[in-house]
Length: 261
Ligand SMILES: [Zn+2]
Image (cartoon, rainbow, N blue to C red; front, side, top):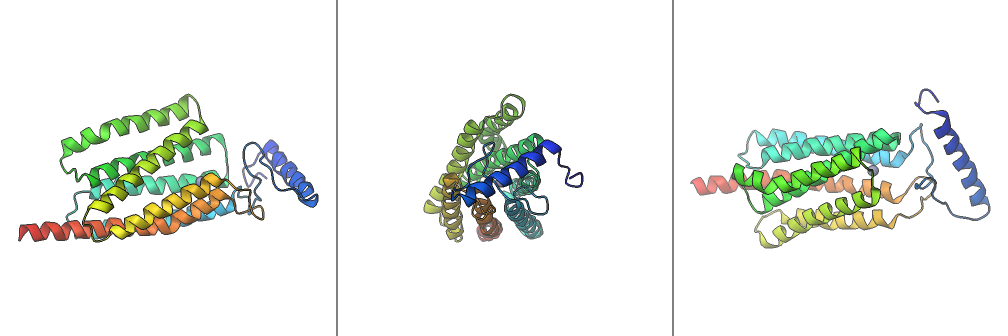
């Protein structure tokens, strides 16, 4: 117990839940939520083992995507490179805290997971606006990003220092997620970008993932729940998205060279 850094009350709650679920299952009843969460079996001391595994894979894919983009960036002249570098850092940071939170859910790990996810979503929305409207001027970028930046910071401060309001946070995250994918989808629809099919795939995949997570079905075999499946779907989407970012850097460099000739 000490090795896993678990305290007696949380261990007691877990074993009590396992006993109750065994009894319910023997009587033919399905699982019920405990303290607002579906009962999941611990594996190697990990609270939500599949969410940990899928978050770790997503982390690996984000690190790989970042490194490939950094290397490519040495050979390209891409106006959005610095923004995607920040995006890469926020993605990796979000995956790290997701692994930590799903391994051991505590108030502090939950706040860090939630905060890093909000920061990533807020920045993703900013980058979708700057790229789709092709805003290259620094002053115009600051002007366009400031309201969203201020809102994201205020929301993070509200969650951490005033109230961890899950209902409100879900509304904010869903709105920011839907808004950014709507912007990318409209841009893909009207632009002549040669790799826009990758945007369609990621927009469609993100929509399916969001619907799946909102379905919040009871866990299968005490391991597979809706949130773990959402984490699983994000892995191929991460690969396709980083591939699009690299293609965008190559395409813009090619376009720039063509104009200079
Ligand atoms: Zn998660």
